[in-house]
Structures are given as structure tokens and as C-alpha cells.
Image 1 (cartoon, rainbow, N blue to C red):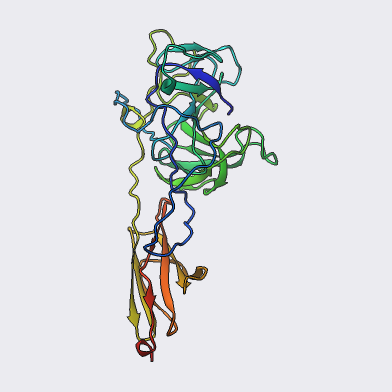
Image 2 (cartoon, one colour):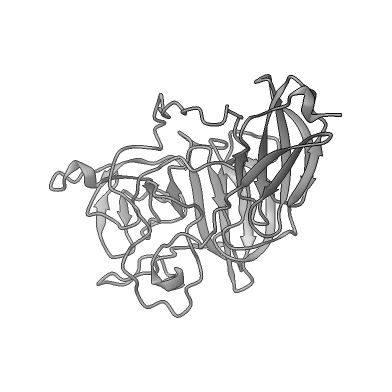
Length: 342
């Protein structure tokens, strides 16, 4: 939900929003060609400058910890859990998990600019500055909700959202998505791609709202727990829920795709492989024209493409693993001469 400017001592949770390859396949390019450097042409209000979250915060004791971050790669946090009033009722204060209390709308003039952060008075979760990127299940569980927060209203509430019941009394929420990739009742695994972040619902910019709730009553809790020197203003502390006691990226093996080609009696023999399981889509590019689909939803293996003499070909293979991560690989260019074919 919408944050306003606020600053304080740095949370290890704050981090830089770098673009992570989304679940969609990339456009094909000529093998060996240099890619133009990526340049972001604008910065949404939910993706400011600030300190890094690199997934290496010091571990703390957490006997019931089981959650990992719902993304990979360093990102910003643009709003924290407000222990003073995590019910969207502003009270003029924001209380952090370690007992730091700041005035709503205030600015910490004693801290360096790199330690400024955004917050939302009454916020019941954590906002991350993800810009149309993969959103991941924070732990194994069952999807209990996967649709619009308020059916028929694109700009209401949390917009397009998913919720996962983890079976231990905890449910996580993933809001403001641009795309859902799971459905209600589906079992998901830690690190599985469940959607693409976006700007739906009541949102001032592209980001992910991630909330942790007691399933019974859907009461919001802070995954950091409470470690302040005074009593938690929010009487529903569930303890430190991070796996290992601190936010970490899920252990996801990024797939790598290998593609090779060779001349065959009837065309071009193409071989492809990546990680275990998953499925592959194979496209062919002839004489640097637009790519066209050749094979879809196949396993690792090989096949012969019926090419024509006097033409050149290369192949783009997109692999999707069982967690929904995708990666593409391309073959070298191969030209067929008339003496290679019958």
C-alpha cells in the first residue's frame, strides 16, 4: 500500500531493486551479437535510492523460523510493518520490530541520505520495490486465494493477489501483482514463481506487498518478531519467522540451457538440455527472419529440423523448470549447402 517519506537507522531488510529475469521468455537475438546495455528510463515512486538488502543479515535464534524472501537478488524495501498500528489506522507513529519509534511523516536528519526509508503509517506488511519481476513462494504451502482483492476493481485494495496457507498457522499474502501464475488449491514449493509483480490495486508504483498473517482470524504479524526494549504495541507477536533467523533468498538453482546443432541427412539435428524435469519450447530462426515456433512443451532431447539448402538457421530453446523459472539458450548459426541434403 502507499508509503510516505520516513527515515531512521538502517534495517538490514532495506535493499536495492535490481531487475530479475521474469518468467517470460526473452526475445531472440543473433548468436554472438553483443547485447545493448540495459537502461531503466524512469524510476517509479516505489523504487527509490537507498541502502542494500543483500540477503546476508546476521542470523538470530528462530526455532519456528521457516520463511525466505519472496524474490531473489537485492531490492529496496519501501515500507515496513508498523507495530504501533498494523491495521491501516494512522496514529502518527511508526514502530519498528527492534523498538525504534519515529513520527509519521518525519525525516531523520541525523542519518545519512543512504539510510532514508519510506514507510506507511499503519502498514500491515512489507513493501518491496519489485518492477514486474518474479514473485516467489516464501515457503511450501497451498494457495488459498488467487484473484482480485476486490473482484471487478483493478485499482482497489491489494489488486491482483495470491495467498499461501503454509499449514502451520501462518498465511502469506502477495499483493499488487500484474499476473498470477497459480490457482486456488494448488500446492507450491519454496522459491516457486507464483506471479509477476506489478502496480494493481491501491498502489503508487510498481512493487510487491508481502504480508504475513495468523491464518486464524487473518491477523497480521511481523516476520521479524519483536525485540524492542519495551512491550510490543501490537499484541500478536508470533516470533522471528525467518528461516535461520534472518531474511535470506530461497535456494533456487537457476537453470542453464545448452543447445547444439549439426548437419543431418534431412536437415539440422538439434540437441538441447538443461536441468532435471521441466519442459522446453524450441523456436527456429531462418536467415535472421522472425523466430517461429517449432516444438512446444517437450522434454530434453534432440530432433531433426527439415531445413532447405542455401539457408542458414539457429535455434532458441526456452526451458521452464518445475519451480516456474525460465531460461533461454541459443545454438550457433548453421548453414546448409546443397551437398548436405539428398
